[in-house]
Length: 205
Image 1 (cartoon, rainbow, N blue to C red):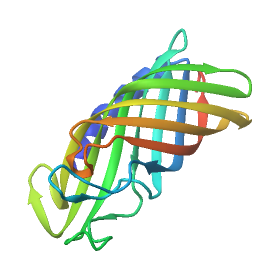
Image 2: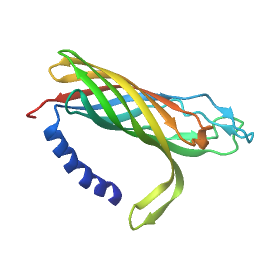
Image 3: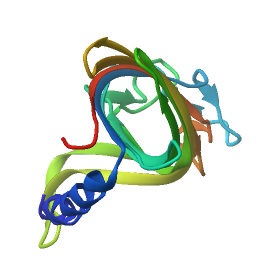
């Protein structure tokens, strides 16, 4: 927990400085799901489950500076733990886990009276948290009951904003993660589809 507070203490002041220079700032919260190839057998003959399914809440923010160019970031996590193995007779064990996806992007965004679009590309990661029946503690991260497996990912995405009331919008969006060395899921890539509700802030907010 201490690590998260340190990160927030650094990131929030930086975001406020950038926001004061931004032409637009879009903040949104959404719900979606993830799709990936179905369960398979890896090269060692071991059954591998699929990443598909589950409800994924998400938070995102996009800053548009000048000439429709900006940057943004987002995080999405599986609301309920999934079971790694144990779902079919092919698996001999069951391990609760939760995937978390995050990304940081360069963004090209255009806003008209009722509509807007954002195209983005960048880098991020997949964090797989495998839960254990016990807690382990350290002075820096505090106490946790999971072990993380982290994978670098490239990210591409796009969305369409529809302004249904003033600066408030609804936004269907699609994201694709090129996950490096995703061995827990037979090196598959992942697509995420989300519908978000948000608000666009303009200069002077």
